[in-house]
Length: 286
Image 1 (cartoon, rainbow, N blue to C red):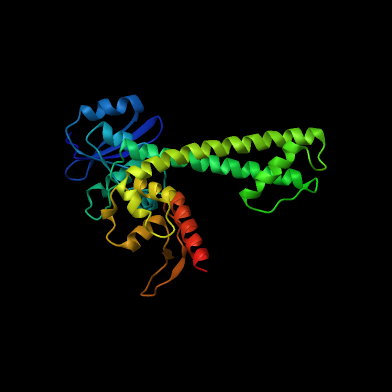
Image 2: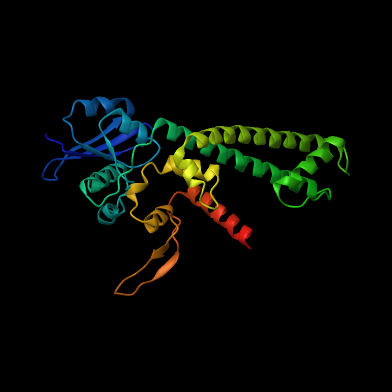
Protein backbone atom coordinates (compact mmCIF):
# COMPACT_ATOMS: atom_id res chain seq x y z
CA UNK A 1 0.00 0.00 0.00
CA UNK A 2 1.16 3.56 -0.78
CA UNK A 3 0.12 5.94 1.97
CA UNK A 4 0.55 9.61 1.09
CA UNK A 5 -1.39 11.29 3.93
CA UNK A 6 -1.94 10.23 7.53
CA UNK A 7 -4.34 11.62 10.10
CA UNK A 8 -3.23 10.99 13.66
CA UNK A 9 -5.56 11.22 16.64
CA UNK A 10 -3.41 11.75 19.73
CA UNK A 11 -4.18 10.39 23.18
CA UNK A 12 -2.18 9.53 26.30
CA UNK A 13 -1.60 5.84 25.61
CA UNK A 14 -3.52 4.82 22.46
CA UNK A 15 -3.25 6.50 19.05
CA UNK A 16 -5.58 6.10 16.07
CA UNK A 17 -3.90 6.16 12.64
CA UNK A 18 -5.82 6.79 9.40
CA UNK A 19 -3.97 6.75 6.07
CA UNK A 20 -5.11 7.39 2.49
CA UNK A 21 -3.54 6.85 -0.94
CA UNK A 22 -3.36 9.12 -4.00
CA UNK A 23 -7.02 8.51 -4.84
CA UNK A 24 -8.15 9.36 -1.33
CA UNK A 25 -9.03 5.77 -0.48
CA UNK A 26 -8.48 4.67 3.10
CA UNK A 27 -5.69 2.07 3.07
CA UNK A 28 -4.64 2.22 6.71
CA UNK A 29 -6.82 2.13 9.81
CA UNK A 30 -5.01 1.07 12.93
CA UNK A 31 -5.06 1.60 16.66
CA UNK A 32 -1.59 1.49 18.19
CA UNK A 33 -0.06 2.01 21.60
CA UNK A 34 2.41 4.79 22.32
CA UNK A 35 5.45 2.51 22.07
CA UNK A 36 4.24 1.15 18.71
CA UNK A 37 3.63 4.48 16.95
CA UNK A 38 7.18 5.53 16.09
CA UNK A 39 8.21 2.05 14.80
CA UNK A 40 5.07 2.01 12.62
CA UNK A 41 5.91 5.38 11.05
CA UNK A 42 9.57 4.48 10.52
CA UNK A 43 8.63 1.40 8.51
CA UNK A 44 6.53 3.49 6.09
CA UNK A 45 7.53 5.63 3.13
CA UNK A 46 7.81 9.39 3.77
CA UNK A 47 4.35 10.97 3.79
CA UNK A 48 2.41 13.94 5.10
CA UNK A 49 1.19 13.51 8.69
CA UNK A 50 -1.41 15.76 10.24
CA UNK A 51 -2.21 15.85 13.92
CA UNK A 52 -4.38 18.03 16.12
CA UNK A 53 -2.65 20.87 17.92
CA UNK A 54 -2.80 19.56 21.48
CA UNK A 55 -0.39 18.97 24.36
CA UNK A 56 1.33 15.95 22.81
CA UNK A 57 1.72 17.43 19.33
CA UNK A 58 5.13 19.18 19.80
CA UNK A 59 6.77 15.93 20.98
CA UNK A 60 5.27 13.94 18.10
CA UNK A 61 6.18 16.60 15.55
CA UNK A 62 9.78 16.61 16.72
CA UNK A 63 10.14 12.82 16.85
CA UNK A 64 9.78 12.26 13.08
CA UNK A 65 9.17 14.20 9.89
CA UNK A 66 5.64 15.29 10.77
CA UNK A 67 3.59 18.39 10.17
CA UNK A 68 1.34 19.63 12.97
CA UNK A 69 -2.05 20.48 11.59
CA UNK A 70 -4.36 23.11 13.04
CA UNK A 71 -6.83 21.66 15.48
CA UNK A 72 -9.69 19.81 13.79
CA UNK A 73 -12.63 18.57 15.79
CA UNK A 74 -14.20 16.37 13.09
CA UNK A 75 -17.53 18.22 13.37
CA UNK A 76 -18.35 17.94 9.66
CA UNK A 77 -17.62 14.24 9.55
CA UNK A 78 -19.70 13.57 12.65
CA UNK A 79 -22.72 15.16 10.98
CA UNK A 80 -22.46 12.56 8.24
CA UNK A 81 -21.55 9.51 10.31
CA UNK A 82 -23.30 10.53 13.54
CA UNK A 83 -20.69 8.77 15.67
CA UNK A 84 -17.88 10.33 17.65
CA UNK A 85 -14.87 8.09 18.17
CA UNK A 86 -11.10 8.15 17.74
CA UNK A 87 -11.23 6.54 14.30
CA UNK A 88 -13.64 9.20 13.03
CA UNK A 89 -11.43 11.94 14.49
CA UNK A 90 -8.33 10.53 12.77
CA UNK A 91 -10.20 10.37 9.45
CA UNK A 92 -11.42 13.94 9.86
CA UNK A 93 -7.89 15.15 10.64
CA UNK A 94 -6.50 13.39 7.58
CA UNK A 95 -8.90 15.05 5.13
CA UNK A 96 -8.07 18.80 5.59
CA UNK A 97 -4.27 18.37 5.90
CA UNK A 98 -3.80 18.76 2.14
CA UNK A 99 -5.98 21.87 1.86
CA UNK A 100 -4.13 25.07 1.10
CA UNK A 101 -6.55 27.20 3.15
CA UNK A 102 -5.68 25.39 6.38
CA UNK A 103 -3.56 27.25 8.92
CA UNK A 104 -0.82 25.02 10.23
CA UNK A 105 0.59 25.43 13.70
CA UNK A 106 4.34 25.86 14.00
CA UNK A 107 6.03 23.37 16.31
CA UNK A 108 6.99 25.05 19.57
CA UNK A 109 10.57 24.97 20.76
CA UNK A 110 11.57 23.45 24.08
CA UNK A 111 12.06 26.94 25.54
CA UNK A 112 8.56 28.03 24.48
CA UNK A 113 7.06 24.89 26.02
CA UNK A 114 8.96 25.60 29.25
CA UNK A 115 7.64 29.17 29.39
CA UNK A 116 4.07 27.98 28.86
CA UNK A 117 4.58 25.39 31.60
CA UNK A 118 5.63 28.20 33.94
CA UNK A 119 2.49 30.12 33.00
CA UNK A 120 0.25 27.10 33.64
CA UNK A 121 1.92 26.48 37.01
CA UNK A 122 1.57 30.14 37.97
CA UNK A 123 -2.09 30.19 36.94
CA UNK A 124 -2.75 27.11 39.08
CA UNK A 125 -0.99 28.61 42.11
CA UNK A 126 -2.86 31.91 41.73
CA UNK A 127 -6.19 30.07 41.70
CA UNK A 128 -5.17 28.09 44.76
CA UNK A 129 -4.12 31.26 46.60
CA UNK A 130 -7.41 32.96 45.72
CA UNK A 131 -9.31 29.94 47.05
CA UNK A 132 -7.36 29.99 50.31
CA UNK A 133 -7.94 33.74 50.73
CA UNK A 134 -11.67 33.32 50.14
CA UNK A 135 -11.78 30.53 52.73
CA UNK A 136 -9.97 32.68 55.30
CA UNK A 137 -12.33 35.61 54.70
CA UNK A 138 -15.37 33.35 55.13
CA UNK A 139 -14.06 31.85 58.37
CA UNK A 140 -13.15 35.23 59.85
CA UNK A 141 -16.51 36.69 58.89
CA UNK A 142 -18.18 34.15 61.18
CA UNK A 143 -16.49 35.90 64.11
CA UNK A 144 -17.23 39.39 62.87
CA UNK A 145 -13.74 40.04 61.47
CA UNK A 146 -14.21 41.54 58.01
CA UNK A 147 -11.50 43.04 55.80
CA UNK A 148 -11.90 45.12 52.62
CA UNK A 149 -11.66 43.30 49.31
CA UNK A 150 -8.37 42.95 47.43
CA UNK A 151 -5.44 40.73 48.26
CA UNK A 152 -3.44 43.62 49.75
CA UNK A 153 -5.72 43.70 52.81
CA UNK A 154 -5.06 40.05 53.64
CA UNK A 155 -1.70 41.04 55.13
CA UNK A 156 -3.51 42.87 57.91
CA UNK A 157 -5.57 39.79 58.70
CA UNK A 158 -2.47 37.61 58.93
CA UNK A 159 -0.72 40.11 61.22
CA UNK A 160 -3.78 40.20 63.47
CA UNK A 161 -3.73 36.40 63.72
CA UNK A 162 -0.03 36.39 64.64
CA UNK A 163 -0.61 38.97 67.39
CA UNK A 164 -3.59 37.10 68.79
CA UNK A 165 -5.91 40.07 68.42
CA UNK A 166 -9.65 39.72 67.95
CA UNK A 167 -12.44 37.55 69.38
CA UNK A 168 -11.10 34.29 67.94
CA UNK A 169 -10.93 31.08 70.01
CA UNK A 170 -7.52 29.44 70.23
CA UNK A 171 -8.51 26.45 68.08
CA UNK A 172 -9.96 28.63 65.31
CA UNK A 173 -6.83 30.80 65.39
CA UNK A 174 -4.60 27.74 64.89
CA UNK A 175 -6.56 26.66 61.81
CA UNK A 176 -6.51 30.16 60.34
CA UNK A 177 -2.77 30.46 60.93
CA UNK A 178 -2.31 27.27 58.90
CA UNK A 179 -4.29 28.86 56.07
CA UNK A 180 -2.23 32.02 56.37
CA UNK A 181 1.04 30.08 56.09
CA UNK A 182 -0.33 28.30 53.02
CA UNK A 183 -1.18 31.65 51.43
CA UNK A 184 2.30 32.96 52.13
CA UNK A 185 3.90 29.82 50.70
CA UNK A 186 1.81 30.06 47.51
CA UNK A 187 2.79 33.72 47.18
CA UNK A 188 6.49 32.80 47.46
CA UNK A 189 6.14 30.13 44.76
CA UNK A 190 4.33 32.58 42.46
CA UNK A 191 7.14 35.12 42.93
CA UNK A 192 9.75 32.50 42.00
CA UNK A 193 7.92 31.71 38.77
CA UNK A 194 7.54 35.41 37.96
CA UNK A 195 11.29 35.89 38.45
CA UNK A 196 11.94 33.16 35.84
CA UNK A 197 9.44 34.73 33.44
CA UNK A 198 10.99 38.17 33.93
CA UNK A 199 14.47 36.81 33.18
CA UNK A 200 13.24 35.28 29.89
CA UNK A 201 11.36 38.47 29.07
CA UNK A 202 14.52 40.56 29.36
CA UNK A 203 16.40 38.31 26.91
CA UNK A 204 13.60 38.08 24.32
CA UNK A 205 13.27 40.88 21.79
CA UNK A 206 9.69 39.95 20.82
CA UNK A 207 8.57 40.19 24.45
CA UNK A 208 10.11 43.64 24.85
CA UNK A 209 8.38 44.87 21.69
CA UNK A 210 5.04 43.51 22.88
CA UNK A 211 5.40 45.24 26.23
CA UNK A 212 5.42 48.63 24.49
CA UNK A 213 1.67 48.12 23.86
CA UNK A 214 -0.43 49.72 26.62
CA UNK A 215 -1.89 47.10 28.95
CA UNK A 216 0.73 44.42 28.19
CA UNK A 217 3.32 43.66 30.85
CA UNK A 218 5.94 40.95 31.05
CA UNK A 219 3.37 38.27 32.03
CA UNK A 220 1.18 38.83 28.95
CA UNK A 221 4.18 39.45 26.68
CA UNK A 222 5.87 36.16 27.58
CA UNK A 223 2.60 34.25 27.20
CA UNK A 224 1.98 35.72 23.75
CA UNK A 225 5.54 35.19 22.54
CA UNK A 226 5.57 31.55 23.68
CA UNK A 227 2.09 30.70 22.38
CA UNK A 228 2.13 32.47 19.00
CA UNK A 229 5.29 31.05 17.45
CA UNK A 230 4.67 32.51 13.97
CA UNK A 231 2.40 35.57 13.90
CA UNK A 232 2.63 35.75 10.09
CA UNK A 233 -0.13 33.15 9.80
CA UNK A 234 -2.54 35.98 10.66
CA UNK A 235 -2.96 38.38 7.74
CA UNK A 236 -4.58 41.11 9.84
CA UNK A 237 -5.69 41.82 13.39
CA UNK A 238 -9.22 40.47 13.03
CA UNK A 239 -7.89 36.98 12.26
CA UNK A 240 -5.86 37.09 15.46
CA UNK A 241 -8.90 38.31 17.38
CA UNK A 242 -10.98 35.47 15.90
CA UNK A 243 -8.28 32.99 16.92
CA UNK A 244 -8.52 34.32 20.48
CA UNK A 245 -12.32 34.12 20.42
CA UNK A 246 -12.84 37.87 20.72
CA UNK A 247 -15.20 38.24 17.74
CA UNK A 248 -18.99 37.69 17.71
CA UNK A 249 -20.57 34.46 16.57
CA UNK A 250 -22.15 34.55 13.14
CA UNK A 251 -25.56 33.07 12.36
CA UNK A 252 -25.93 34.51 8.87
CA UNK A 253 -28.14 32.93 6.26
CA UNK A 254 -30.17 34.02 3.23
CA UNK A 255 -28.20 37.25 2.84
CA UNK A 256 -29.02 38.39 6.37
CA UNK A 257 -26.17 39.00 8.78
CA UNK A 258 -26.86 37.96 12.35
CA UNK A 259 -24.18 38.55 14.97
CA UNK A 260 -24.32 36.92 18.36
CA UNK A 261 -22.21 37.24 21.48
CA UNK A 262 -18.44 36.90 21.73
CA UNK A 263 -17.53 33.35 20.70
CA UNK A 264 -14.87 32.72 23.42
CA UNK A 265 -13.59 29.75 21.39
CA UNK A 266 -9.88 30.60 21.50
CA UNK A 267 -7.13 30.46 24.09
CA UNK A 268 -8.88 31.24 27.37
CA UNK A 269 -5.69 32.12 29.25
CA UNK A 270 -4.42 34.60 26.65
CA UNK A 271 -7.88 36.11 26.33
CA UNK A 272 -8.00 36.57 30.11
CA UNK A 273 -4.62 38.32 30.20
CA UNK A 274 -5.50 40.66 27.33
CA UNK A 275 -8.90 41.55 28.76
CA UNK A 276 -7.38 42.30 32.18
CA UNK A 277 -4.74 44.49 30.53
CA UNK A 278 -7.33 46.35 28.44
CA UNK A 279 -9.49 46.88 31.52
CA UNK A 280 -6.52 48.35 33.40
CA UNK A 281 -5.80 50.76 30.54
CA UNK A 282 -9.43 51.94 30.47
CA UNK A 283 -9.45 52.51 34.24
CA UNK A 284 -6.16 54.40 34.09
CA UNK A 285 -7.44 56.58 31.25
CA UNK A 286 -10.63 57.42 33.16
